[in-house]
Image (tube, rainbow, N blue to C red; front, side, top):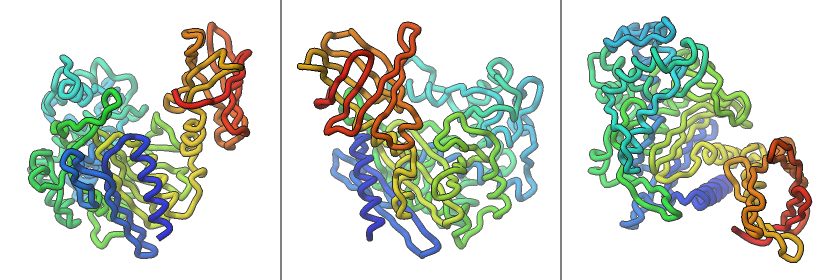
Length: 454
């Protein structure tokens, strides 16, 4: 199948670039009754165990989709309202600038409270040998109540701040309203109806299946296995497989035989609530537990990403095309961008339809060692995200600056990319020429030609 060859090419390239050992993909196209289930690389490098479609990973913040669906199910059943103040259920005051933070505010990350970073502190204490405090999920309630009074910036509903802690509160709300532990509610009312069997709330239980993918991170240039993160909860603590996550995406896309929540409720979840601070396409919004890319080239893309140490994931669906996918990995790949590339390739479109893919292609070509006339000057051009670091090697320390490529030139995939840097209060213009056998950098009074890698 041509589509599968293209998908495999994307996966292997992205895994190689990011030093990601393993991945699992599940994709369904309801219109033409096509499904793709693939495993790539290894779930355990040390033991030589390959990944498969039913390999189990931490899905991190994709857990938020399960949590938000659980909340919306309680809303449908009349046990909860989106306008209900969260403090009504948690026994702790949660008000920002005198106004109550509601269930809707927590679902949409619009409480007005910037991240407390409890998860970041946990990660640091577990993996980086720091003195950061390892907070429990119960601690989060106290911290958030305090932050609402002393740390908030905007009134509820005014501004987007991605808040893991808000989804911890929603876990407690589910328990209070349903009378069931969060884990049991998810299992009984979401997983079981969808036929999801491999779903776990701790890595130790997931290990017992013999299908767990161990997380890997790159430290000092070397790939190292670490222990799975076991401290997240309703904000990011689920472990499951791509095959199982796809079942929920199918249900939300309306291409499943099982309806967990009504179509009108899913539409309510997809309705934009706040403009994301991170933009891929210029019209990216957060709904209720769902990220909405309105300008995705194939039509509106709805879903969620996830990230924990050694795990990256994305799951989503394109409603107009009746397509859904789940991509789970045990490395540091950009799972969201990779999933988008997979959808574009699967649909026979050109990757140049994705601006970030064009940027990657051009900046990867530009990166390297540049030399001047008779090698009298040498400099490294290193990619840092979507900008470039220019640093002279000979003479050492003569130049060190950030080069900002022109967005319009990138978008047009021009053979001449204008660049801008700022030094000593001055704006310096330059350009990179790509219509030669090797890229040529014109900067200040210098012409340098790429000659290799740094």
